[in-house]
Amino acid sequence: MWSLRLTSSSPVSFGGLIGEGFEHWLGHQRQFWSIAAAFAVLVALVDFATPATSHGSQSGLIAFFYTYVLCYWFRLTMYDDWKARSATLSKTKETRNSIYRPGFPFVAFCLAYGITAFVIGFIALVSASVNIYDLSGLYLVEVFLLSALSYVVVAILFANMLLFLPARAVGLRPHVQDSLRLASGVRMKLLGLALFCTFFSLVGAACIAVLVATHLASEIVVPVVHGIAVLVDLLALYILAYGLGRLFITKSGWQPEPLP
Image: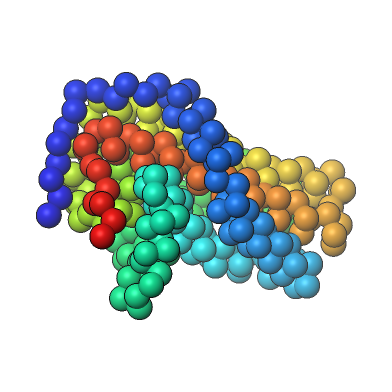
């Protein structure tokens, strides 16, 4: 059961959430880089070893990995004793998988978010009569801009439901309507977090689009930039996890159960 305790307001400003998120990230460099660096290098190596035409098929696998990492970021940022807690959970087979496993509702929410962005982006591309098979020069820039617009739209659509994610990440069982009620009083902060992290994560994709459009892309440069873009994405997800977790704790009064 999820005991919902609504509070009247959140004392943390939007700027404070972002600043505290970066401070928390700076204090957990080993945990971040042990995951982010390894995956970024893997993505760069796969890009380098495979034809450019096959890179699009990797997006689904990368998004699936992001879902698992986002859940882990929530646990890392919402439990002050996560290092000790994860060590305790890893001792038994029954609880070991719970360290990383996000659960089906969490995955389904992220999948709905991604599918909605894809559908909106596809409709925008078709409406603009963009040749999606010509990913060179200005065509790629146009594809990027329309895709970026789709992510902004979906961030606005889903912002009020985002507190569903931290609740699920810590093992609670809310419904989406519970997260909508919990968002009362912090809707603008939720929207700000969603848009900030969306724009932040688009930096890497923008760099790749510019490189291709200006004919500066090469078989080495693009994989390296793609690896850096993955690092930026994972940092954006970290800041998002911290901000949403902080808002969820403030609004719901949730506290972690003590270690046994």
